[in-house]
Length: 243
Image 1 (cartoon, rainbow, N blue to C red):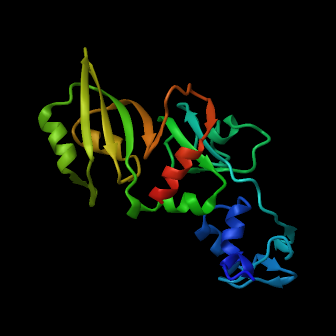
Image 2 (image 1 turned 90 degrees about the horizontal axis):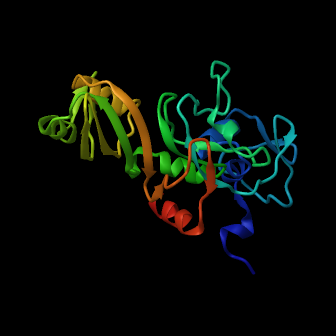
């Protein structure tokens, strides 16, 4: 006789996340709004379901679990990180295979930035990894106009308050001057909106290139702009441990 949670089903919000409807919090909002029904009845938050036996619908449309997909994408400059944006000319999600289940990005890169983007339809893992308390480090290659001085590096690493928000870089290293520009690497675990650009603007530097090289244990590697790859089992295990 089974005594595990599986014997009494899975939490409804977890099932909805596995069906590709977003993070667990987003799925909870769908339930609270009364848009989800189980066997014809409006579902309650925290209820459990048997996916193979119960009829689960969203706005009257039957739902089923999708295969869980985890990928790394090199987002080029000019692409927007959104599944739907009528103001965006190009969506990063459109670079992925058409036969993939509906996926979404873990975190974002602004339109003028490029580099590593993680995509998945595992809403539960995505929510864990995106939560600020985990402080997952992300490494960026930054190009600026002008030279980054030792004093400026120290200030970035000690932190600064801009617009009432405290911003700090975990590490700044590998400065390479090249004429009127400089390139270096910066590690962040905060993830404030446009944080690198804002911090460097405070120092009087314009960012001319911003490329994300890694997210936690996942590296961009030799991926080319616009290309993707599936994460391997070892990478998934490392991500799960971080979350």
